[in-house]
Amino acid sequence: MFESLQDRLSHSLKTVTGQARLSEENIEDTLRQVRMALLEADVALSVVKDFVGKVREKALGMDVSQSLNPGQQFVKIVQDELQGMMGEANDALNLATKPPAVILMAGLQGAGKTTSVAKLAKYLKEKEKKSVSVVSVDVYRPAAIKQLETLAGEVGVRFFPSTTEQKPVAIARAAIDDARKQFVDVLLVDTAGRLTIDDAMMGEIVDLHRAIKPIETLFVVDAMTGQDAATTAKAFDEALDLTGVILTKADADTRGGAALSVRAITGKPIKFLGVGEKVDALEPFHPDRIASRILGMGDVLSLIEEAEQKLDRKKAEKLASKLKRGKGFDLEDFRDQLQQMKNMGGISSMLEKLPGMGNVAQMAEKANVENTVFVQMESIINSMTPRERRSPDIINGSRKRRITQGSGTQIQDLNRLLKQHKQMQKMMKKVGKKGGMAKLMRGMGGMMPPGGGGLPPGGFPR
Image (tube, rainbow, N blue to C red; front, side, top):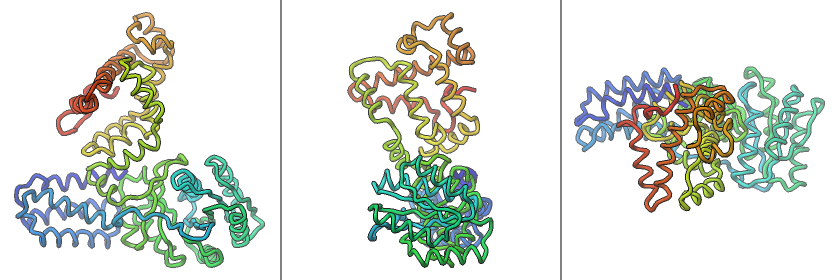
């Protein structure tokens, strides 16, 4: 996410980070590079001008050249302004109304609106503990109604049926009445999308908005469209008075223009990011964390939250108990850890949230590490017998030939896996002892080159 912008900004700010003294001249030179980085990220020109002006004013006004760490002070100003551009903090949904709280979802066709309805329904059900119902008023596309019905079943929320013969306002009113009778907390209304903004489309959705008076009106827009996302959001806001924005396909957006332009142009907060195709791939938008990630400082809070939500706590406790009893870390445990990492979005997803590891994450992604590591390693371990997984030391030459033939891999792939397992085994032994976690962290630090500038030796298969 935001890789191109992160690369350019990191390069621009590197020249001042280590400076013992800053002058007006090198501040201006750095701001020129920052300006180019933002424009190349497809951030709206008016937003870039405003941003650079504020950074310049603060940098010169605070006299960073006199501070103890002027370079770091300058980067802190850039971080604060990035955060301010996107909003100071996460803007949560307002559900404080007599149930059902109606949320109207608007957007252009192809932005991922129907999928976002399902993702938001799952989020509200699991994170906010709300009972949720969904309805489609897209009377132009029967496939859209069917898609929402399928997704509602997948995420386990109530689906209110509709047909193409009905009127959107009539469908929505019937769905609200049904939600009230069924004591549903939140009703999500999926509207029709169009390929472009047109008077007929706006007229229809304005009538719908006026009739059902939603407490939240969210605009769903594709992050890949850059500053165009902010322009279309502004057009919808003028018609509907939006309460927030959901940016979809943010995981594929290497530039970041939409995330940095939407709030500044519309004045409306980005409330969620769509970060993948799966129904659980929706994250609350935290401007402070995104600003930190863009500047290569990581996003440890999001990583911790993700771990709490996605890691199998029972498996983790079982492994911890096993290690405390002095039992070895076998290949079945190793496979479990690989699967847990997969649930967390893979190596690159985890690395990009760690401070200073953005470049490593990009290298891992470009090398397609998820496929080469997870698929290959799991395939090798699955080709072993239960006894071999529990006691890897018995794997001799003939066993190796059988395992590699069964997994479609080479002997060197198996040898690499066994070597990596040995390294993990040594680290896990430290965890089982008193003060083990501190020793483990030191051990892991030793696996990385100074400054975190590259991959651990032999870490990823070529």
